[in-house]
Image (cartoon, rainbow, N blue to C red; front, top):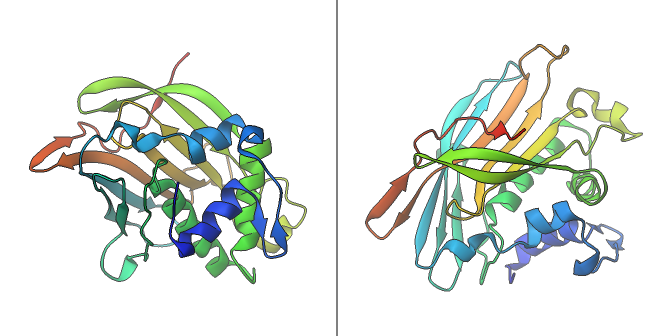
Length: 241
């Protein structure tokens, strides 16, 4: 997809392994299945006319105060994308994306998360965390079939899960964040192709609630004056067995 210059660094970092020292060579036909699902599939292909995608954003956990907010992704007839990620003082500035095929909301979510990782650690730049995510997507991501409920319908979906920092030999530098898990739920039959994005930091015990969790979920899509609202915007996807 054609992108603006600010976002291009992120796309290269995540999809092609860009680091401060250069670009790790990768050809599209060498991408892993997870990379293709997340970064190159034409997720916006099911939008045939100008559409505004609406997502809820819920932060929870004991690490710091939670909140509820919203994300909006506007896609015009030429698939030029403009976004608003959170509101007021929480707003995370976003570049425009021209002629988008994949849904940039994934990159927006990850870039905000990476910025937050840098804020919480002694890392000198976001590139360290970007590269860990890209490598995990290429080599260690898990993909499984699942189902989601949107607009009163149960729909097939794919769930991509990765723990990019779990085996990092340098994790001692950010031990309290190293077990963070990312989950990306994609569904071709929902507007924009992305149903849910999640970053989660588990508690000390498997039975403990996450100490920090951020969840972005598709709640509706407006085409002109017509709106389609999700019946259960915060419902967790159930894994097919």
